[in-house]
Image (cartoon, rainbow, N blue to C red; front, side, top):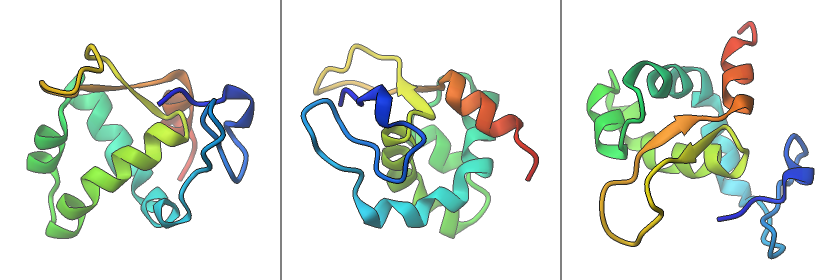
Length: 104
């Protein structure tokens, strides 16, 4: 999903083909500090690894939509070959590292 980088940091990031950040993903932004720290700590984790490391059932159920939200906002990126099959691994982007460094 190629994000239009000129829209990052706005209220409605867009993809290069014009799709807009889905409003329902805003609810998962509150988990940024928890999951960004885990992505950094776990060194390119998969969705399953993040889920296993989540300390509560609420966080476990939020992993998948949080990943979608964080990708849209340019905080994490996939590091695999972006193929339809295989494990999807994620790492922090520079934007994600900056967000993680922000005071809570």
